[in-house]
Image (cartoon, rainbow, N blue to C red):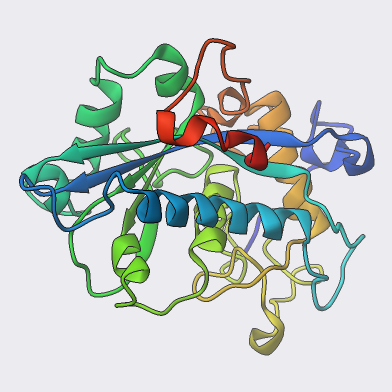
Length: 289
C-alpha cells in the first residue's frame, strides 16, 4: 500500500504545492549511446535513417507530454500539457564487444557499461556527464524489449529518483528492425524517465500517485497510464505531473517521498552556448526545444 501523503504544511516545497498553471516548460537533456560489435554491426549506426528514427522517438515522447490524454476515472484536474519535454543533445556510437553484449546480469553488465562509457569517459564534457540522461542501447538480442533505471549504490532500488542519470534499454534496435512490435518506444523512454522522477508502477502502489481514486487500484481495462508496468498508454494524472515538476525544480527536498540522493534537478540545465553536439544533430535540435 502506498504511504499516507504528508500535509503540505509539514513539508516545505511538497510536490502537492506545485501550481502547474504557473510552471514553465522544463527540458530534460538526453543522450543516446549505441553499442555495436567490433565490426560495427548489430545496432544503430551513424547513418541518417538510424539517426532520424532515434530522433523521432524523442519527438514521439514529447508529443505525448504535450497532449496528455484524460485519465479514466479522472481525479483532480486533467492536465493536457505536462510542460515537461525531452531535449535530444547527442547520439554517440561505439564499436565494442563488451558494449554490444552487455546485459543486466553478466560478466559485463549494464552497470559496467555506464561506468566505462559515462563516468570514466574522458571524451564527455562535464555538461554531458552531469546534466544529461544517458540512454544506453546495448546491441544484445533479448527475449523481449525492455528498459531499466540503473542504480550504482549497494542495496538501493534501481534508479528510483534518478540516483544516477542513466537508463538502459535492451531490444530498441530490434524494435527498429521490426523484430518486436510493442507499445511506443518514445512513451517507454518517458516511462523510465518517470521512474527517475519518483514515480512507481501505477498499479503496484509503490510511492505516491499510484491509484486511480484514493487508494483504489486503477481498473485494468481503463489503466492507460504511462506508468503502468507493461503496455501503458498516454494518460498521466495531476499528481504524477506535480511530482515530476517538484523533483526537476527543487531536487529531493521532500525526502518522505523521494530518495534523498536524487539528481533530477541537474538534468534541466541549459546546454552551454558553445556546445554544438554531434554535427548530424546540431542543425535539427531546435525542433525538440
